[in-house]
Image (cartoon, rainbow, N blue to C red):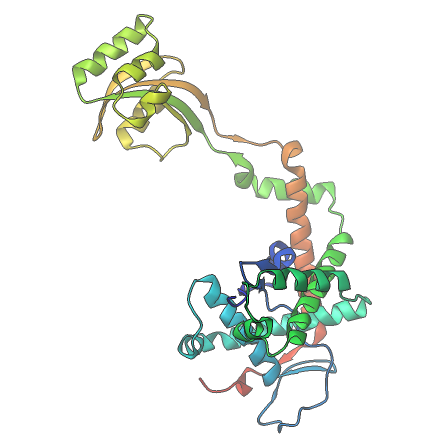
Length: 340
């Protein structure tokens, strides 16, 4: 079993939205846990002195200390390396320690979101926890020890794994709950559609056949035969020298920039349904038949309204979460992190 893979997040909603449903991704071993939520409200200092285990995050009466951050960051590091196919080693872990200040800021956002879950009276779904644990255990190789696999992934115990599963579920619930309260107006949808027209533009495409031969005279003869009523596909099968000859020279459909320049220029200039050539490229000489051309076109709003709506909701949820962050009075103390 390899370590769960972590994903580094940036802005709260922009990263949560596409990933929250995949926070525990099965990857032949453990799920890829996004180290998503912070500990809830444990304000009792550990046995270690404050200097040895300083508070790094404070939101109201909720604090998170260096020891809380370090084990979670350890899971994230192992997860990241596993996702890159790199075995974890102390040396590799040390190289990623420079990410700890960014991870601290990220964790602070997670603490705020978990406090919001608490304020809303949300509780982790036990069925999600149970089913996730079952799926994780089912990925163990025969004879592989579960506790050893957890330790290799950075978990000192199953309870820490359960903590991440629970908190991930709470974050998901918070985001979904906020999104459920938002109903974009028709004007907001229209404005976003206009702003994102490029996103909904279907690129120009050409569909063509060709017959590639080594001899220019043969290519010219093929063009004349087709113009005289000859069957292009049959001639491709008879004379074509590349793999398309077995399918009548069909290249399928493609956009601009996908073919070599002389060939593309000929395709663009060729009327649909008329054979053209010979066209010389570094591969030889081509007879060309464009059988379809679809100009670039913007998909109408009626076709993409659901996508536009989701985009608007995403922006509005992001804004609301940003408001939560600003209003929470979250404090972080990066200066208390260990010197790298």
